[in-house]
Length: 314
Length: 297
Image (spheres, rainbow over the protein chains, first blue to last red):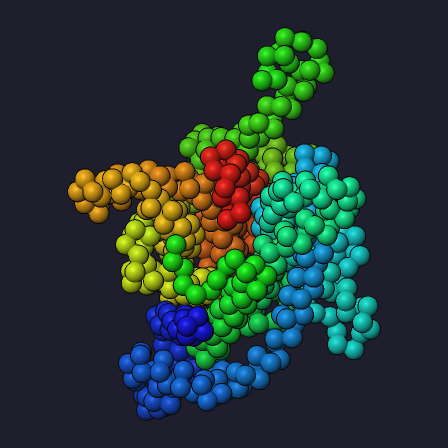
């Protein structure tokens, strides 16, 4: 049942964006070069027929989704390249950056959250909460510009912009990932920290932890084995959503760092009125989001048997 | 409880301790920042040293006053066409507040109404509303916003509508959950038995009960809205020039980083301060009004 809803969700999402994108004007306008001789009435009509522009919107959408189901994502409007090729070309950059940012966010956010809860009110807690407060309040595009200014322009420590030359060594290429990963990962780390902290505080307050302590179990064992395992659920489900958020939310970061990924491809397709590429991008992002939301739910139910997926009747 | 003891024992240390205690208990600094924002947006014309659109090519990319070559004519420096960054920041405060306020209010009204109806009515209406929220969540917002602004030309109105529909979804989910809990309470059943209509029960008996949650979500949401507006403006899909939106100002300075870092830095820092203050107050409200929400938000 949930799978059906997920499919309906994705179809509705693409339909909405498909419809709105049609309001931006006739895509044929993009084909007429300003410096050229214009386009004849017949040719204009012919292109319209070929793209299916003469049919009602719902039919156009139906045609598009019909082709997609058969694995044909169409061609880009201006360059006439198959959209799927373009996607496969740009996807690795986006996926790689999402993974590095995700790892960074997890490695920093979760342990810091645990420590923050254990030393509640202490120095580490203040450091952690300040870190989280800044992480959630700093505009990513501005932070991106600032780290480029400081680490690339002023200090010249790290390169910025693009993903780096392909023939460079692994270390050289890795350097290009440092700044964008930090900028993208900070907000995620802040989310992890807050969730882990509040979950840990709740668990540390419970009876069985007091019992373990009374039994004489060492502090680190209580924290990491008894408490942390039980506080794991919120950060774990968050991690699935965070991955989706990174894959979707990179648009601004990719623009700031001239990152050759899907986010920039999608932004460009908006400005070029390239509906095949745009619809495919939205399809990809929406499907990804529904999938991760589904995974998060399943994770939740597997780890915590108290939660059942069937229906939400209170 | 410590209050009396600390004040009776007057020494510098205890005085500092008292300041620390007040700072910890009340969000003093965020309130000061937001008051500044409020005053700036109310009296931009009186406070700002210059008009926000007055250019002066002799002062283009002029550095802030404490740096070499800077003057008090451009306290925080001048931008690419010599406009005063400080004045633009002050005028921008009004824009940020208007955008955040209107979009939050309309988003809250839509979201709370839907949440109340879905939660109280249940059944098909509930299912439909929640699926609608799911669909909305799965649309990549920035892309959607870009498409919409291109379709309707960038303008303040378009931004407001976009942010309002960004704001509503968080309200629906949380308010619905809250209503489901309140629905089963005895006083609601009593009202039902007494013959109160559905509308009356929702408005008189349930709405006051979810009011705290609404306040908490709203205060936690403002920061996100300001951030979203800034991101849109940065991408060129926000409020059009010459309105001094802070996101636009950051974007303006992007190409002059190596010789005029201040053009991008100050507006971004202003966004940071304001968003942080709203978030801080939101957290503080949540901890005070409803500690149970900690897990949810």
